[in-house]
Amino acid sequence: MLLRTEHISKQFNGIYALKDINFELLPGEIHGLVGENGAGKSTLIKILTGVYRLDEGQVYWEDQKVSITNPVESREIGINVIHQDRILIPAFNGVENAYLGMEYIVSGGKIDWKTMEKNVAEKAESLGIEIDLKKTAAQLSPPQKTCLEIIRAMMKDCKLLILDEPTASLTDKEAEILFSIIGKLKEKGNSILYVTHRMDEIFRLTDRITIFKNGAMVETVNTCDVTKDELVKKMTDQWSSQAIEHRDSFGDVIFEAKNIASRDGIVKEGNLTARRGEILGVFGLGGSGRTELLECIYGYRPMVSGTVSVEGKTIAKPSPRNSLKNGMVLICEDRRGKAMIGNLSIQNNILLSNIDDYAKGGVLDEKRETKDAADKVETLQIKIAGLKQRAIELSGGNQQKVVFAKALMSRPKVFLCDEPTQAVDVKTRSEIHRLLREEADDGSAVIFVSSDLKEILEVADNIQIVSRGRTKELLKNEGLTSDQVLAYCYE
Ligand SMILES: Nc1ncnc2c1ncn2[C@@H]1O[C@H](COP(=O)(O)OP(=O)(O)OP(=O)(O)O)[C@@H](O)[C@H]1O
Ligand SMILES: [Mg+2]
Image (cartoon, rainbow, N blue to C red):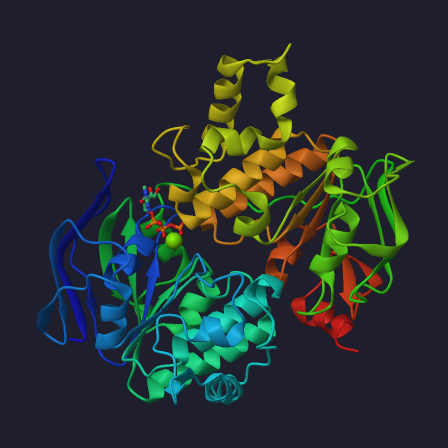
């Protein structure tokens, strides 16, 4: 046995996040870990990597008792990790970040940056990752950050690589790089512990799967012995997914973006039109500029040309504030960076953009605040200890739900979403799809960007192709296959 946990438990504020976990990992296996948001997956990983101390129980590594009290110790015994909440230091460049937690190379009493840079560059190349190591982490896009995390995790040899939601914002191409790294590690006899909500990845990659539910371990199964439906049943309480209905007749045009071009040249020409009742999927390959296009529209990213109008009214000076005022809201890809304030309470995060509505003569109507926030928590089944809990303490998927709740609060006419279901479990994913359909049916327009083509095909009424910074074909989502959509993306 490579790794075994015996009766381990962990509590936060008197509530069990993990209870009595007896988990086993074999040498050379790819082991999937699944469960709903808040089930305890990341907590287990943080215990194994010395981020959290366990309250009860014992960890065995290669059949020896070990106590892992900090991340360095975990690394030393041979565990490398990519955490769900990426831990790069924003002001550090690629080399500095890759060397986080490792000893710097020193020669002649000085830090030998040259050799360090060479080492990191070589590692990146051997992994097939292209990235500018001179840029600070703050300057990287979410997928580039993940690539840097992969380099960082692979700087040292390991026996176990732990990946917590590694593909959450990766495009297919980058995900393939990751899968090939996983394949190579397995060939060498290493083990991998893989956490994801994406069922296709679980079935494609893993040998065995362990299911967590409400902090407890349900069981470990051989991947070849279960079907997707059976697995989902084991994770969730009674629930059956319902496909959302597509529409083919819509109201009047409510949203128009014309000739959008970004100052940095990434978006060259973006044109989007959406009508009341429509869910418009926007799809393009990684690097096509789909995220950047949304950021221009919302006023995050400087433009050199372009106009955006909502209900026929052109937004004079595009900025997030003006967008919001004009009935547009954006759920962005980078949850931690832009969408949430970790140290604020869950309630304040949900009400963040609408706080004015709750102030009468300068006094906040706390009762109504609490009620409205509690309503959203209920609708989205956000797993929290209380509304006053800090948002940072929530599991990754539950943080994403808070971001979604905040967007719903502003009752938008135009809902721009970029990867709105990243990191959320299968159940919430279809709940979010359903809520978006409701918003559209109520007369809003939804613009839906996802790196997951299957998801776009599930939810979108129409699909706008983006390629190399330009909007191209507009496809009606009727009988379309992923191959057909992809064919438009490769020019
Ligand atoms: N630092 C913390 N303080 C308080 N509670 C915490 C903390 N970390 C985790 N929890 C709680 O522990 C529980 C399990 O969280 P965990 O992050 O392990 O879930 P998860 O299975 O990884 O979920 P997800 O799929 O959403 O990432 C949650 O209820 C969470 O709110
Ligand atoms: Mg997690």
